[in-house]
Image (cartoon, rainbow, N blue to C red; front, top):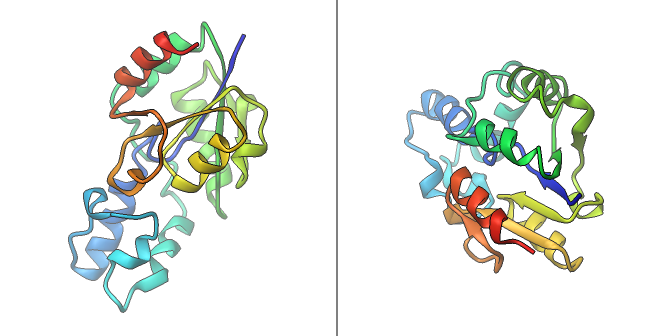
Length: 177
């Protein structure tokens, strides 16, 4: 059975909407995921915020209440019957516990025993990585394995197969050898 490594933030759940909402409320701005032309969020916020944009990722409760992306849970249920699915995510402070709780609530059929925290996803054994971060996609592809991008403006420079949503990912999987 092939092993799929699947990222959590902006692949399974909608991190950007809540993260940007908190920033926009505090800085009276209109940041959105569509405006991010590259991975460096600090390049798209007001100067007085700068790298403090990442402080929101340390706020208790942020990761616990994120919404699943459309069809993510249903597709994960279906594909977990045919693949070994591991959730591989990077994390900061409070997010470890909150991400475990999120998995237990939304993905009990996968469970926290299949949750791996890593900043170096290419080091995890698996046949395919489904992610959004350019650095993860590039590093995984360089190992000779398959990387698939959840398609966002900020990862367009990475030459890997890409999908716009979970239904497209499921269809792509059906053709993957």
